[in-house]
Length: 327
Image 1 (spheres, rainbow, N blue to C red):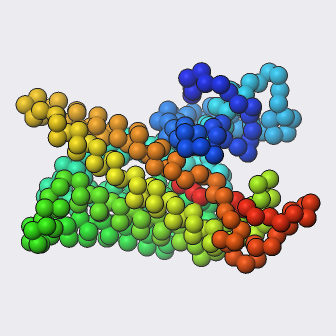
Image 2 (image 1 turned 180 degrees about the vertical axis):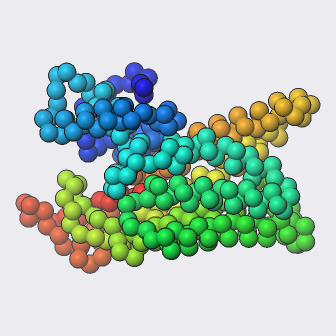
């Protein structure tokens, strides 16, 4: 499988950094396009083995004139798509980040088009069931008990269904301004998805908030465990993925379909809606995740007191530390 990137200038390979500049929004956007590349769902065992072997040889022996930077970046892309960076587990294809867009097209379509009570409940349940599986498979690496998984799942599903049903009721029985707002096609799905998504992320990553996450220097040297760094990472994930991502995904298809003539027939209408949803997901997912860097830069005074007066090897005061935000 060739996962080329369109002939862009190729930077020198590094095991510890990204192919794209993570200090810029454009670089983070491009980097996440690699993560959600649906071709990563079809990586064979041999391709994975060859990629891991190539990276291991680089780690031990350094650069080889027989292996290009392009080959090494592609090997890293393949390895990172399949193997969890913290646990070393193989991620099942259906819950890799590369599966997010194809899996969400029917889910979004169902939530936008459902009008009955049973349909609303089913699509909210299906959406949060998939999100729970995705969150678990792509967790930060913290140990999560079955009780915590069940709690996260139950709260997310319960939140999404109850909010969706509440807004359905308010749309029929609430005050006139509320009825007008609830009648807008994307409002009920957004409120349900955003609230449940936030709850899902929070409870899926609650172990991080309880125990903290590693924080490191710019060079990657770990200096301790911080609960505040975990809080900032979870907050940014909720803002970008749970609250930000659903906005274009649910609004853009509705706006596009409002100008598509209904006279074209049910078949073409369905195709047009699915195309609009797919396009919105392709833009919104990397666009939302790229809002914040994957590697958090933290002011030491925003962390616990034990990080306020750290010194580097030269005796200089450390003012910035770093941690992994998570997805």
